[in-house]
Image (cartoon, rainbow, N blue to C red; front, side):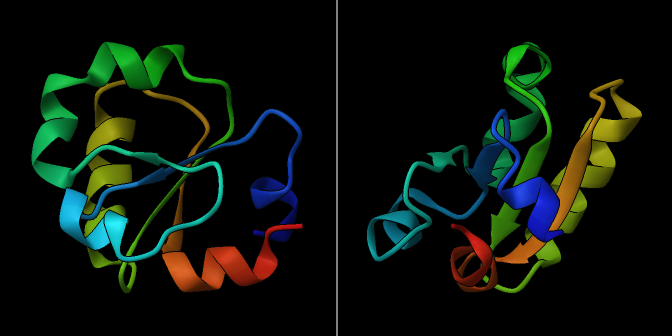
Length: 90
């Protein structure tokens, strides 16, 4: 996962709520709450890859990762909890 998180073209997407995101997040990450994911498929498809999704514990980002993959979004990965992604971000 380190290689994905630190890939020069990686986009880190935090799928927590705006309030949770405001309370702390990975530097440079994008906030797209889980409930907005289905309405923003084209945006995900056009993001720089790989996509590393995160949330609080990995549950919501896992749901979003699975959903996006089913919708044809490639190179999408569940990074787990945002604090874990933050630790590995260089």
